[in-house]
Image (cartoon, helix red, strand yellow):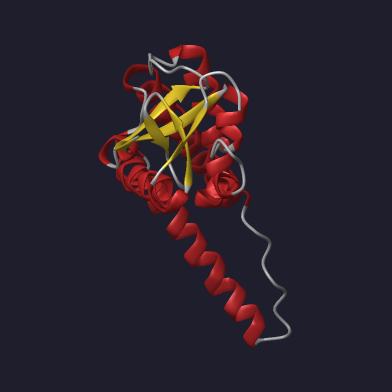
Length: 187
C-alpha cells in the first residue's frame, strides 16, 4: 500500500481499504452518485438545448419518413443523412460534454464532490491525504475533464475498474491521483 493508504479489518475478517478514517467508496455507491448526477445534468442540459433538440427531432422525423418511403418503393433511392442533422447532433454532443466537464470540475474543485456524490456521502480526496483536504483545481480539472469525456463515451461502465483495483479507482482517479471515500463508513 502507498502512503496514506491503509487497510482496516472489519467484521468477518474482511479487509477494507481506507483513507482518512473512511472506507473507499465501492462500485454501487459510485454508480448511484453517477445516476443522480446524470439526472441533474440531464435536466440542465434539456433546458439549455431545448431548441436544438426540437430541431433534431424534426429533422430526424423527416429523414425517417423519407427512409420508410424508400424502403416501401424500390424505385425511390434511400435518402442521404442530412448534413444539418449531423451538425446538430455534433453540437448537442459538444454542449453536453462541456456541461459535464464544467459541472464535475467546478463541484469537485469547490466541494470535493459532485452533488450526486454528496447525496451518497462520497467525497473525492487526494491519494494518500489522510487529512482529506481540498483536492485542488489541478486534480479537479483532470478528474472533471477526463471523467466527463469517458462518461460520455461509456457511461457508468467507466466505474468498472473500481471492482478490480485495490484503491477502488476509476481512470479519472488514476490520472488525477485521487480516490473517493465513503463518509458514511468510518473505520
